[in-house]
Image (tube, rainbow, N blue to C red; front, top):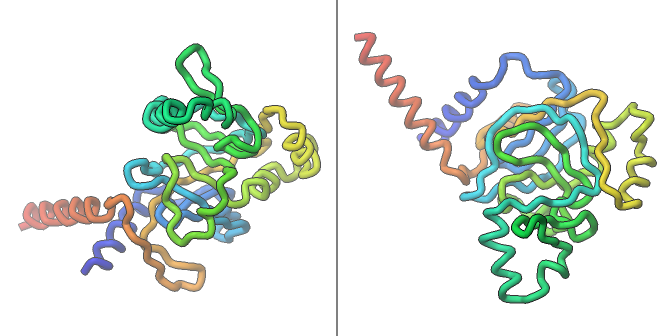
Length: 243
């Protein structure tokens, strides 16, 4: 019964998507913490990701990646600064300076680009109302885990350099060698994509692999049960109205 409700919830989420998805697109399965690049229905690149922990959920959304920021600084959200960073500074004076943070306008924290930056060397920008994005990370250990839900909501990538090279492929201004040189130089630069790419952040806890094998994941955000209950309530209303 639980599996039936899980499949029902995931099929409902499929129904929300366009009938024809863009040929070139990136899909992130939030629940499985995996990013896949598609050419039509064929996956051409896949990598592990780290997605939002319960309480800091990665939102479901669709948008378009328009540029890649190389050596990005991190403008720290106020909530993270208040809950995590300022207490660390209070407990260990000098913590912020040692980790590359500076205070902007007397109130905001910004971590400078570099090896310590929480965003690593790449940030993939797309418009959304949640201030989330795909990005690199200097913290690599979590990629070895099966369960990889531990971010504040953004999506950390196992192989961001490979994704950058793929999205910039064919642009003479951003060959892999020029990207590597920009990273090494350390300056913050923005590489605009000549072909913006659709991106979908999706919550799949039940999905079929390429050979039709069914896969299931846990429901870390407890979204399946809520959605399944709403579907059942809708069905009950429709059944009652049809009598």
